[in-house]
Structures are given as structure tokens and as C-alpha cells.
Length: 82
Image (cartoon, rainbow, N blue to C red; front, side):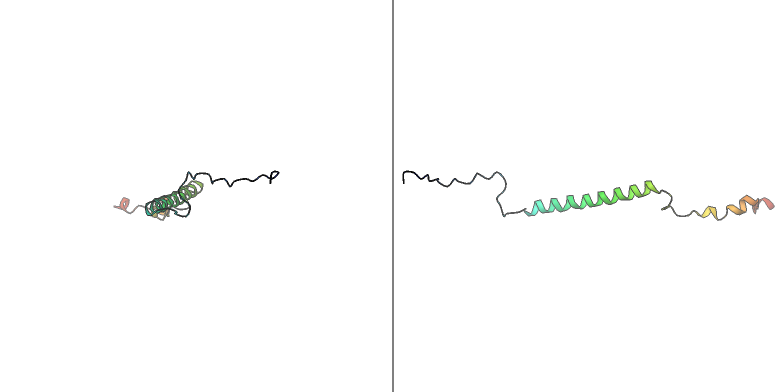
């Protein structure tokens, strides 16, 4: 065996992160869920604001004073007849 080389197995490199398989603890999962909910609310608000900016008059209810505008334009005033 003078001509063969044998390599000894190298040890695995040290792990710098959390141990594999443990996952997130309860506090980290709670914070992650809370942040995810906040991001969803933020996206919904951004979509709503963009829709309002693109078409601001579509979401406004019709005002009631426009129904009486025709009478005012014709000059019919009830209180002026007194």
C-alpha cells in the first residue's frame, strides 16, 4: 500500500445559524403573523388609494342638492312668493 492515498473524512463545517429542524418558536411565529397581517392591510390600503386617485368620482355618492337644481334654475322660489 505504498502507492495509494487514503483521505481521512473531514469534519463538517461548524453551523452558524439555528439548528436545523427546530423551526420558529411561538414568539417568532406570532411576530411573523402580525407583520404579515400588517403587510396585507398596507397592500389593501395602497390598492384603495390608487383606485381613488385613478377615478375619484366613481366612489362618491350622488348628492341630493342636484335634484332640486332644476327648480332653482327656473327661478321657482317658494319663499319669494310671500
